[in-house]
Length: 199
Image (cartoon, rainbow, N blue to C red; front, side):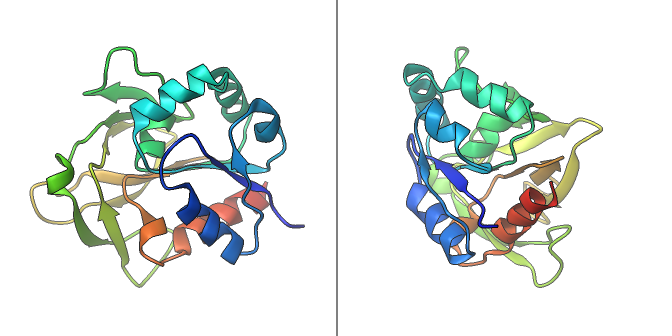
């Protein structure tokens, strides 16, 4: 069966995720309406500007359908801004910023600093095995704390952010602070597709 893995197309690096998903054999339609959301097996929330994405979701009538779909068990993967949108709680966010939920985590927005503080590093990612994963962080968040049902998949090693959580999974909801769609390493997307297929 060919999976239909939608990419939320409100703002952000939609095409990069679509390209990887189609290269891996999935269909990757853009999702902008509740009807399009209802037609997918899973969803990717791309990197971008989380406040803009949240606001547009509200304007387009997507906020509640997204929350309901995720709460009902829709598999979701969020990268960078997508991690923020999946968080149960936010730090350093505008008071009116909405999230879709799905992860029992507290996420700190722009935790690593501003655009000029963007960086790359190599990470050990649990469940993916060797080699190390090259991770691109762009105005990235991190997970400040995670609930008991959340599996920590990766932490930063070394430097001022040593030990900070940057990849998590709770059931079939997966999130990374970094952008695997920008490096050519498809293992995170492969892992997500395997979660979707596992049912």
